[in-house]
Length: 132
Image 1: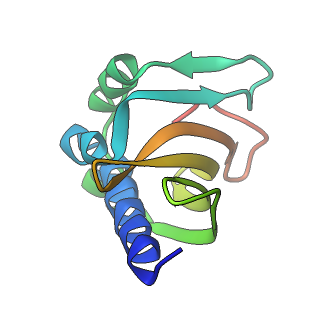
Image 2 (image 1 turned 120 degrees about the horizontal axis):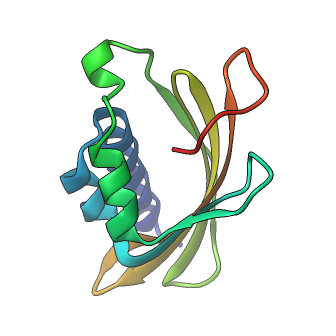
């Protein structure tokens, strides 16, 4: 794929992480497709949300930014399955958790969007906690 596609996805990931770190629903809406799936099974049970439910959960949190907590993220890998489908391995920390996200993206109307967020988390210094 083109350098433009890599750049667009890297920018999307910056917005995604900033949305999580600041609990900013408007930023998350920019990058998560309205039909996106959220899924996690880190605590041994499948947890899924549609975007309306996920945004409500995020809106109720105290942001890591407002607490002055550590901010770190990295793109591990971006793979393309064609001109309009990509897969991203993304890691980030929002204390007290470290997340390992597997994001599937689609390019619609010239814009990349996350269509699925499947992830694992670990609580820093512990075995498990609730999802992000």
